[in-house]
Length: 266
Figure 1 (cartoon, rainbow, N blue to C red):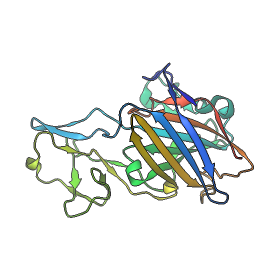
Figure 2 (tube, rainbow, N blue to C red; figure 1 turned 60 degrees about the vertical axis):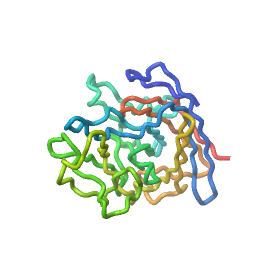
Figure 3 (spheres, rainbow, N blue to C red; figure 1 turned 90 degrees about the vertical axis):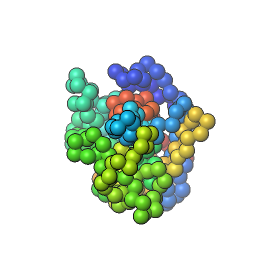
Figure 4 (cartoon, one colour; figure 1 turned 180 degrees about the vertical axis):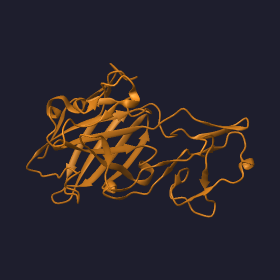
């Protein structure tokens, strides 16, 4: 599968080859394996760095991959793919939003993030309707780690607690920074606090690795979930329309987007 850069972004007119495989077990799970080249592992996500007496956010984001499955028929999605929901009429990128045209159209969004979801073994489960893209019920959204003036980190790892994932801050394992004088040049503190996944948002398990300039990501979910309204329900007797977007250390508007794809069960 070839993903092409979205119009107007830094990947415009560029192409990325993404390898995709899917397997399922009857009455069990569907597993989707995605692999693509990436020369750098985007894993810092605006980390705070202390230097020369002040804190600065590093200019970095994270690598991501998203899959949009059609739940309720989205007009032209089968022939045009994600382009029909990537509405970008507004001149200001901040006003762009991802949504369907009508309330009768709905998609199931799986979003894997290298920094804010993968360390906890999940991809975020969400959906897209005629208003915007939303998260399923539950927890899993990362939170910004910053003071009210947004000039430095507010929390650090609580030394009295064993971290769930070394090098990352996880909700419930942090302590507020009271004494900033203890930090020295070069010290780095994460600018995001990860939230443990629960509820419908936790439906998608993830396992990923970056090696030799390549990401390999495995996403797995039950064929039938408990949320029929916001999750695609897989039936081996049917085909399913989908689109895939890959984000290379970039923001939500800068991605490689696939042509329309179809999953056929054998």
